[in-house]
Image (cartoon, rainbow over all chains, first blue to last red; front, side):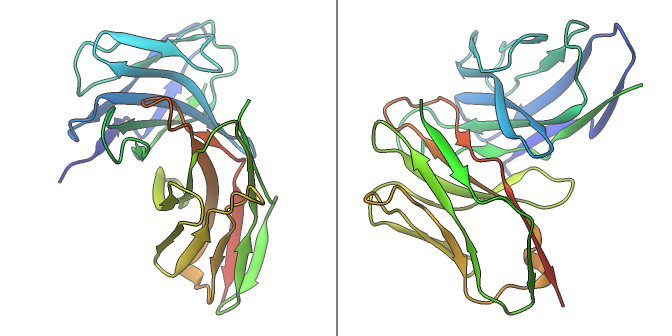
Length: 115
Length: 114
């Protein structure tokens, strides 16, 4: 079955530590996205990538970094510069051209907690 | 910029009651509109979508009609079940910019009791 996998399901970060969240898709989608979800806030865009080796900042990119070395993978690093990282992180993907390009498919999410 | 506003929750209903969750949008172009559902501890699942005015999206008994004149995309279901308890998100995308992010409302929590 095609889909998006995120790991780990729960992640604990110590003060001053960088942590990396994994996102893998086997849908052959060109575009991938990272969103952050906080209670009562909806989803906010962190970074997105329309093609391999290219990515763009979203609305709340400060304190985060990404890479897109392979089409299937879009890892997100939460750096020590992100002072309030506790949230639910969702990865999504979509095609880049042709229908249904406008539809994004989501992974199961990673919950990040600060120790 | 583009935005989505949906009714605040929580919405609490008894089983078999009629459901409406209001969603209105602001957009400069002609966006595609979506409803996503999130069950506790899970990611988002696409519930239904509509890509042009007067289109009706439907799935699992839920329906929503793209109303350009009122810039609305209200979600309805005739008879809710306990299993419909979840958070529902209204969202839009700009069709002129493929591969860009969805814009989400803040979500509406639905709780259905038996």
